[in-house]
Image 1 (cartoon, protein in one colour):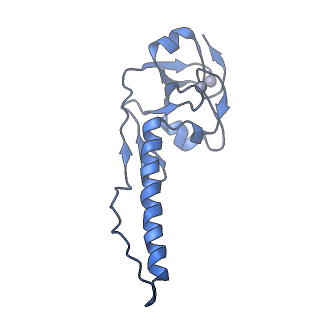
Image 2 (cartoon, helix red, strand yellow; image 1 turned 90 degrees about the horizontal axis):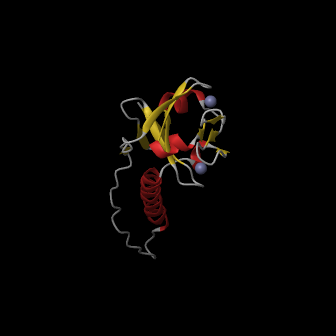
Image 3 (cartoon, protein in one colour; image 1 turned 60 degrees about the vertical axis):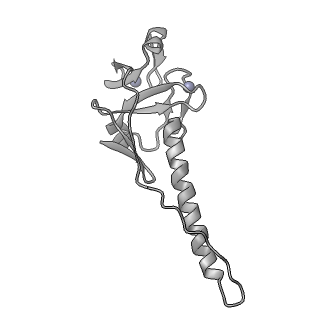
Length: 148
Ligand SMILES: [Zn+2]
Ligand SMILES: [Zn+2]
């Protein structure tokens, strides 16, 4: 199972969890992939550490953003070359560099295997956090309730 962002897809771990990262506090956590795909829709996600809820698109982890940028740049270059081809005439000669082929179908591996899985009773769902975050207390990313 995976969550798709453009052409990059985020791979879930063997428990069906995908890694997210809060844009504000940079803490990483995992949520159920099936929830993100089927149930989230226009709802917001609550960062388990700082407790602020935001749209899912502010929770992509660093490695996902890097891959998404590569895809965007490759796509922009391809469009640029296409546009230049269009303005070529016998009076103007523009040399276009061959576009580097970038694999725009990237699966981002889930690398956070050291997190602790926790069942949040309020939503009856699974999340994963680093063990120090679990001991410190956290917010339910699904509904924003405080869990200690
Ligand atoms: Zn946060
Ligand atoms: Zn909850």
